[in-house]
Length: 394
Ligand code: NAD
Ligand code: MG
Image 1 (tube, protein in one colour):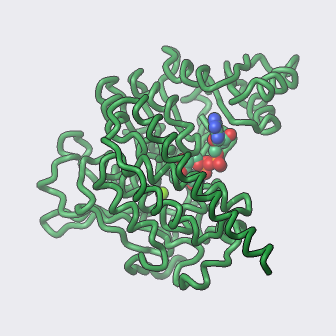
Image 2 (cartoon, helix red, strand yellow; image 1 turned 120 degrees about the horizontal axis):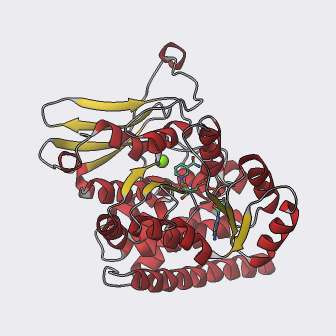
């Protein structure tokens, strides 16, 4: 799911290296018909799904006589395919809350679920983890940090969540493209500057999240759900080289880390082949050429998003609200609407305005997500109207 994206492309690259091991059954995308034509021609999946019917019919027409792929439209078709008995593994790589329903379907159907779509877990934590348990799914984190944690924690699922042996999870952060910048400097950054990540090449939404440090806030919640920890048991450490992908500090003083070049094909290959290991096409890590590994504390005054997430985790429904407000704010910033430094302000206003119970069903999660999106759209609208008024007054 999300085959045309950054994670989707890396996943297809790994699959393409192992035609003996894996067969691509279905692919999905939002509206990128051209990219899907290429994917369907090269990999010949049985099914392809586009988010809307116009894109789906354009894809079906283009594939006529070229590929036997059957094309469907809409999220329901994605949900159905995620639970299809023919499917062993699902890569959840749709960006944002939109990926929740298909990912949940894969969890409920007991698939091996490779989870890149962190927003789904963060917004629906309790509901999501219940679906994984009830469905008997194998949940494999693809986010590089959580994949590192998974690799450094005990293999046995019970030992993995044993709080006794682990003193702290150390969640590494690159610091993003604006590490070391002041709040003042951040007010005028452009979407293209925010998307120019120093170490990783990623989709635009997660690139902005990395630049605001919200990505680390989402990842903090993600780690809490995946490994059954409280936020106090997880410490964020800025590590600009992105060579150490996270660490586990055990109570006997041992610290285990997973290292590698910043290339998502490593966690993707691990998720696909676990507990085996397969070639991922990733260049070997050359420590001498890396030369140096640095560490520093995150700057939560210039980048308040991490602090907002640390607070929201403790509030019922807080991460659902935070995630929705963040999605609305980031998309306005990317469209040239609000400023970079307005993103955290939108989220803070929404967190203050909305009180809720912890959502305990998919319906409740969707309702809360909708409320928070509406509130965030209002705040963004007011901010833009103020900017217009200032411009007109000048
Ligand atoms: P991307 O923008 O490159 O790709 C997103 C994919 O989702 C595309 O295939 C798009 O067609 C599809 N999509 C978007 N909206 C959709 C909708 N409404 N319905 C159906 N499909 C839709 O994003 P990405 O960088 O590949 O990230 C995907 C997910 O993986 C995100 O949740 C991100 O946080 C997570 N992730 C990405 C990276 C990375 O290196 N890119 C690392 C860790 C986690
Ligand atoms: Mg990550």
